[in-house]
Amino acid sequence: MLVVMQAGASEQQVQGVIDRLVNMGFTVHRSTGVTHTVLGGVGPVEDFEPADFEVLDGVKECHRIISPYKLASRSFKPGGTVVKIKDVEIGGNSVVVMAGPCSVENVDQIEMSAEIVAKAGAKVIRGGAFKPRSSPYSFQGMGEEGLKIMRAAADRNGLLVISEVMDQSQLPLLCEYADILQVGARNMQNFNLLRAIGNVRTPVLLKRGISATVEELLLSAEYILSGGNYDVMLCERGIRTYETMTRNTMDISAIPVVKKLSHLPILGDPSHGTGKREFVVPMARAAVAAGADGLLVEVHPDPDRAVSDGAQTLKPGQFEEMMQQIRLIAQAVGRSA
Ligand code: PEP
Ligand code: MN
Image 1 (cartoon, rainbow, N blue to C red):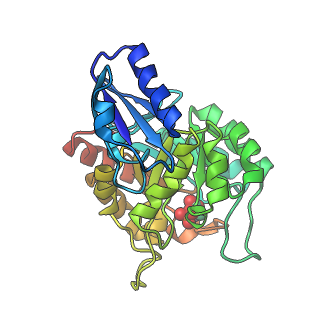
Image 2 (cartoon, protein in one colour):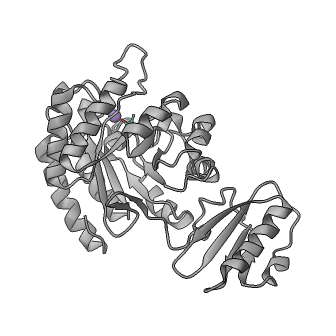
C-alpha cells in the first residue's frame, strides 16, 4: 500500500505511520519527494483498509497499489528517480551516454576507447570483464584484470565505469571497481542475483530479458528495490521476435511505456537492439526521441577486430556523429545531451 503524507508533515507524523505499518507486518520503504513523503508498505498483508490510514495525523491519502510491482511503480515516486553517481545524473534533464566495447580485451583497446568516448561526450565507459556468451567456447572475459584496466582508463578520462555482473560471487569485485553494475538480458530473471544486488548500494542497470514483458522487467527491478538498493536504471535492448533482419527487435515503445508505469530511468541499447552497425545510429536517435534517459552503445577503436559483437559496434567516427545527432534530438524534446 501507498501512504502519501501531507506537504510539510512532521517527522513525528511520518514515524507514527511507519510504526503502524510495521506493526501490521509491512516492510516500509520511504520515498522523499520535493513536496511529499511517500511510504510504500510492501509484504503479504492483504487485510487492511486504506481509509484507516487516511485519518492518521499528517496523512494526505492512502491507496492500494494494484500493479504487481510496488516500489517500481510510478505512484511510489511520481516525480521520477534521478540516479546520482559522482557528478553524473541519470534520469534528470540530460541524456547520459554509456559507451565502449562489448568486452575488455587489453589495455590499449580500453585506453583508446576511453579517450574516444570521453572526447565525444560520453560520461560512462562500458566493457564486459565477465562475458555471458552463447557458446562456452567463445571468449569469456578478462575478469578482475579487465576491471582494473577499465577503472584506470576511466579515472584518467573522467568517466564512470559500467560492467556486467553475471553471478553473486562476482559482486564484491564489481562493487570495488565499477560505478554501475550491469545485469544482462540473460540474467534479468536470476532472482538470487537480483536479491544479492538489492543488498549492495552500487547503482545498477537492469537490461530487459530477450523474451521478457515490460511487467516482468519491472518485477525484476522490484527484487532489487525491495532489498533497499533504490538506484536502479532499466534498459531496453531488443527482444526476440520472428524478424530476422536484425539481431533483436528494438522495442522503442517500451521506453514511453516504462516512463508511464515506473519512476525508474530507462536507457536504450541500440547495439544489441539491432545487431548491425548500420542500424545503431538511427535507433539511438529513435530512443532519445522516445524519451530515453540515456544510451548504452558499443564502440571500439577497431570494431572489425573486436573479440565480441564487432558487427554491431560503432567505429569512432560513427560514434562522434551519433553524439552530434542525439544532441539535436535531445534539444528538440526538451532535454540536453
Ligand atoms: C552487453 O551489453 O554486452 C550484453 C551482453 O548485453 P545483453 O545482456 O543485453 O545481451
Ligand atoms: Mn555486447
